[in-house]
Length: 374
Image 1: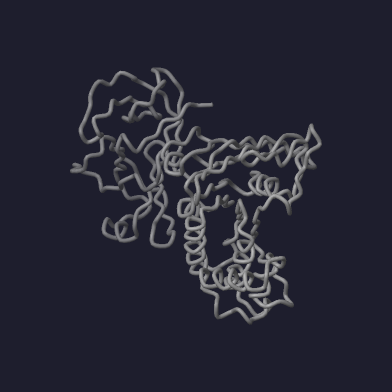
Image 2: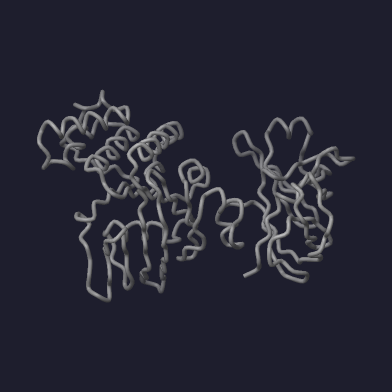
């Protein structure tokens, strides 16, 4: 059964900062919505409003057929009656209780046998059965967060709210706990909302995504669709799309079609002195000012020379910089404008690339997403 979340609120803070949140979305059973954006964008404010921790200056909040907040009508449903689970970066466990005692605390009104069974099931699901008798102060960060999640889930909340709960963990613990939480949400059929500013975490966890920038929700939709087709340049930059270039639609009537581009019709963009072919978007007309958005993984770096690839766009350039990012190198290329490519370290070594190396950047037309200039 899907859940409907409707939120239309305004928060005002000292210094004139305003968070204006409008969200009306349907969460399928077992699915997760990611609230994504930079620090200070308003993600946590929205989550705390849903939890009932923060009260908006104006507006309404509704979950399914239940209105939780209506400021003009004076309605405010207390957090404890919303049946919402809320987990933050800090586990906030009771230090005098054991792991099992913390988990059972949230269902203290249940019969003892039911509490024990529920606690055992959750500890097993999160791989912490061996910690049942250990006090909270003796747990590692990853162990404590697993206990905190189990405690939050014990009462079977209708909505699970996750405020960057993995941020303080080491990489291995973070990956493992993300996997377990995602599996539990799917299995339980609960709806969940995750706050993160980590693009990889958003892609790993989310089914849908709401991109937040400057105190506004800019785009909501299936995660793959939003990453593939950001609504505007602000969304594109927020999502970490490495290259966002101002462009002019030079021709909107390129009749040529190519099987390499899936038979799509093409438009011609002018970016500086260069001409690029991109897949035509509805409404893009000659003379329009647009932004060309190109993800780094879609840029192929070649040594200059005849190309054997299928990409329609080949731009001559010179490498400006190479920044290692783990197994991936971020390569910035000056083609009259800068383009960022993400390539493997092995590829960089095989091509003997270094700052100053002459290269060609190859980009398929389908990899250039055109968005209107706001």
